[in-house]
Image (cartoon, rainbow, N blue to C red; front, side):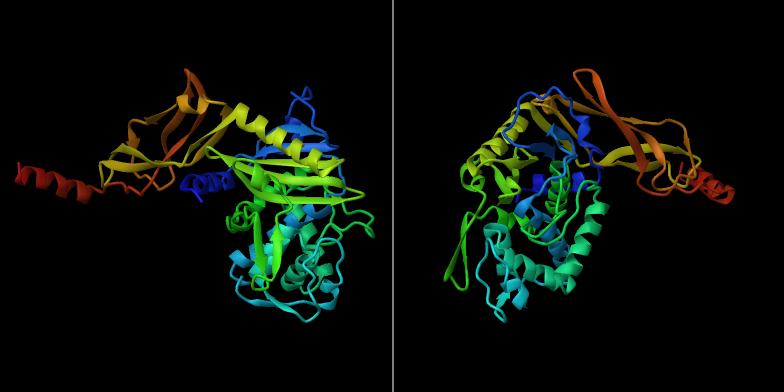
Length: 380
């Protein structure tokens, strides 16, 4: 995984997501063949395309994005190891639909369970992961809905960890909410180690896995993320792709066929990559500021990361100005504002932010001032 991708992920964490999909104009540049759709930039959370984005619909196995998110949060917190063996319950083994045919009492490494969910959308493996995290699927679903609320997924209600909807009454989410949880899942980089796999095996090579997401094989830059389909949901997908440092999420809900869904996702991703580019500044040192009346005459300065989505190609024309204030008097505390960083493109100011002190500078005392003056006289 590129260093630039990691930097942009961090920048994305520092910036709030767009609060509503309605930020996109109503006059859409084209229509996708789906009941609802969203295109989102992961670094900034900006919505680039939205069609019925807040409509609550059945998501099928795209549900498993939340299942994977909760599991990866436990892994990255050190509570679960991918090397540990998980035991399959009778309930988990009873799941229908997509599966890897786990048997009650069978044990399998957590990593292989994870691969089975991400690559093959295995319902039995998904429930096994859920039971590992929360003890039961019911308890896990409670955590799914809590996490959804924390992420601002206001049109979502989960009833299971798989997306199977034959017996559900209100297992619903929206394209915008799927984009939100997809964005959060991508902050766990381990996920793309598996979601980019086209074919793999489990059970020491005895059982093959083929990715349900055909874009992984046929779309340049595809990184994941999850497909799903049921008779109620139609064909759904959260498709992610990375090009030139820009990572996009294309959510499709309610397409009539797998091929129509895939084409709709491709259409959204192509649009995003053709029309937009990402400018990212990781922040860092911003020179020094002169300090009056301090134990030091200067203070190191710094500025925070900044990311902005821009029309294609405009990111290459961005210039940065550091404007340090004059006559700054001590004391200065780390984090105090000492200037402004300004971003410009073609003479237009895109963004301004504070430059801050990177260290403390105490006010000089009379005694310290006397000793300084004495030293100057003695060594003159």
